[in-house]
Amino acid sequence: MSETGKFILGDKTVEMPVKHGSIGPAVADIAKLYSQTGMFTYDPGFTSTASCESKITYIDGDEGILLHRGYPIEQLAENGDFLETCYLLLYGELPTAAQKADFDYRITRHTMIHEQMAKFFSGFRRDAHPMAVMVASVGALSAFYHDSTDISDPQQRVIATMRIIAKMPTMAAMAYKYNVGQPFIYPKNDLDYTSNFLRMCFAVPCEEYKVNPILSRALDRIFILHADHEQNASTSTVRLAGSSGANPFACIAAGIACLWGPAHGGANEAALKMLSEIGSVENIPKYIAKAKDKNDPFRLMGFGHRVYKNYDPRAKIMAKTCHEVLGELGIKDDPLLDVAVELERIALHDEYFVEKKLYPNIDFYSGITLKAMGFPVSMFTVLFALARTVGWIAQWKEMIEDPSQKIGRPRQLYTGAPQRDYVKIGSR
Ligand code: CMC
Image (cartoon, rainbow, N blue to C red; front, side):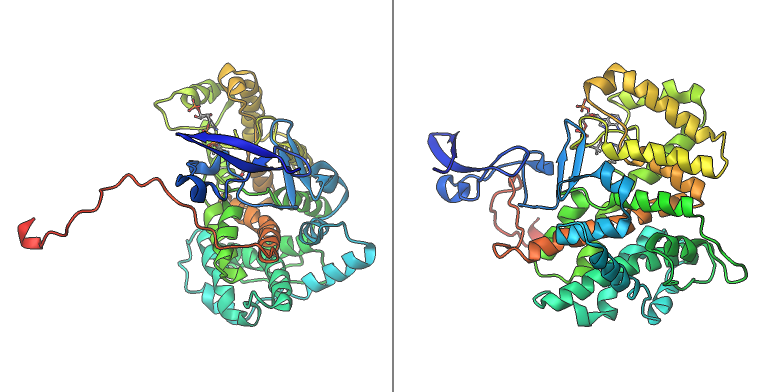
């Protein structure tokens, strides 16, 4: 017999089916609530709302667990590479050696972008933020690749998926090169995904560029850590945009726009700026006090998470990666790292942060790591977008392939003026 839950709403008692996932909290299926009671639910920020059913990623925020298709993030980051995680997110299983080789080959063959896109880039101001360039140029892919925008054609969906994953590093590198005034570097397909990206960012035509394998591996791991995170704001944006039947390039552009905000992907940029602003360990108490002050809007960037009420498992791997990268680059005394380590230590023992269960999140150490690798602060969120693209497209694909999929259409609690009659301008 199927399980139901009872809701008492005013003078009505209604029964709602209760659905159980494979792990995690059960959900009350309220789809018929309005037809049975005339009431909507009200949940701004979706703090208690499951917006969809998904098989891709699972988070247990209390325990600090993150699984992709059942595999712990720690194991994926330790043992595999980013394209393997991409395959897993898209298709549900780890690839065999032959499947992996085929997938890598197909992604690699889509790394170039239409030559006219280079002209498109030159329309931006030189000092444009690379995220602004990414929002526009990824959306513009639908104008260049309209042979893969018919979402009802499974083959076109596959090609669009390959294209987006393959072209993001090329476009991210172009956004960077444009900003620093250097020529675009074409992809080199005998390199792996992440080494190719590093080369497109840091090579110049007048010199040989040798990819540092330790940095490439570290960045690849950073990409794995960012690949997907279930129904976060940008992923929900992609799903909502896609629910209307919009093409995948446009949907990913919508996701990039949402990711840009400082409460989401923009936090890595904001965290590094904050560490620079704090400047030295002696200033930390002042900033801790600001973060705790209800009348001060300041927040410790890179701290806290809607879902994790424990250490973000990605943050632990990120902290380790940060030390590896700094070690490889021979950076012994990074004042920002000193501030970060001390800030983390103090915050983890401070009653305010302990009580509210505010722990470092993935963005706390990523900025220091990316800065040490040579990326400017304005590129941090672009790198997040590059890696999250696979999560967005995997979630979009899952939604499109779901036969019960409908357009997303939340309702509202209206608190504006009731109906009134129009008053002609001379009589107002
Ligand atoms: N510093 C100081 N106080 C904080 C912080 C912080 N970073 N984060 C939350 N709080 C306090 C907040 O003031 C509130 O206090 P009270 O209950 O007294 O009003 C309480 O903790 C709960 O905060 P909330 O804003 O209701 O929680 P939320 O789930 O809506 O917000 C968050 C989650 C990530 C937006 C928030 O923790 C935050 O703004 N953190 C800083 C930005 C950041 O690091 N974002 C990256 C998130 S991880 C990467 C990603 O997913 O994109």
